[in-house]
Amino acid sequence: MFGRDAGYPDSDDNILNFLSLPTLEALSVSFRQLHIADLVSFLERSSPPLQVLIAGEGLGSSDFIKLHRCLTLVPTVTCFEIWWPDPNIVVDLFTALADSASLLPNLRYLTIHHVDESNILDSSCETLIRALSARRTELQVVRIIFDDRPPPVDLLDALRKLVADGMEIYIGTKERNYIVT
Image (cartoon, rainbow, N blue to C red; front, top):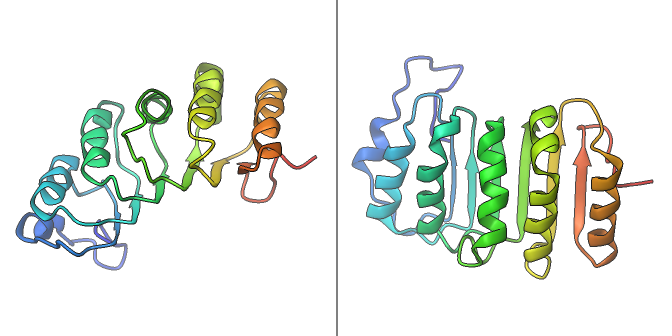
């Protein structure tokens, strides 16, 4: 994983600026030290057949345009995870997935960890449902992990319909899936 390591607090992720990895299939990055522009440059230079992309914490609300650029550079990604995302990034991601079939066209597994549900759910329930409905034939597993409170009942009802159609959805805390009745 590229990104600051607790065991190596002086780590420097400028190494991506010097690498080209054209056969890379899995990448996990933290944005606490790494700038997303450096990741864009790395992906443009490498053009890897990435299957798994894990984005760690550190992306700000203004970083979605560059994150979107990263995601367009790796259409082969089947598994995308994001940790501690800014609520605006999550809303923008749902919107982009709903509106653009060419963004991550091979996406099968989507996981969003430690979402601030108070900001996400109040503003984007409809967008989430629209995104998952638009991708229901491709997406197999969706996991959205919140820190505490359950999502609104109407959102859970809509998600249960997608589950009935075959999508595996986990939405809740680490301990509890609110989709399961």
